Amino acid sequence: MTEFSPAKFEDKYEHYFPELQTAYRNAFEAMGERYDSELIHAIDQQILNESEPFYDEADESGEDDGHSEEGFRIELPDDPAERVTGVVVDDEKLEGVLAEYVDTLEAELAAVFGLDEGGPKA
Image (cartoon, rainbow, N blue to C red; front, side):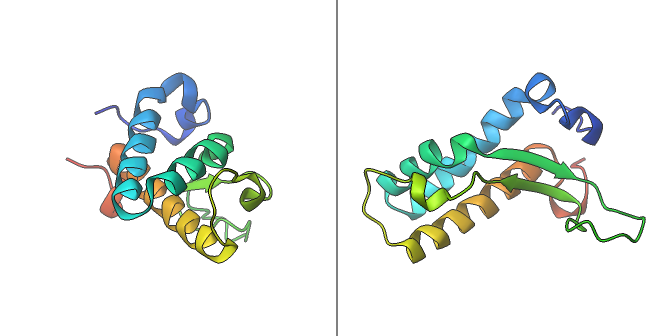
C-alpha cells in the first residue's frame, strides 16, 4: 500500500492515480450491487466524472472554515441533477442515491489509503 500524505494529495493525479481509480471502481461496484445499473452509470459518467476528491486535515486553529472534520470529501459540479440524462429518475431519489454514492466513495478512498477506522492500516 502506498503511504498516504495529505501534502502529496494536493497533486493527487500525479502521486495517487492508481489508488483513485481503485476507490472509484470499488464505489461504482458497491453502488451497482444496490441500485439500478443505468442510474449508477449515469451518476458515474455525468456527475462524478466532473467531481473532485479532496483531503481535509483537521483544523486545530479553532477557526471555522466549514470543513472541521479530517478526511476525504467529494466536491460535486454545480447542478448535478441537471447533468443526468438518459435515465428517468425523480429528483428526490437521485439526490438520495447520489448522497449515498458520495459517502461510499469517501469511505472507499479512506479504505484504499488505509485511513478508515481512525488511522492507517497496519
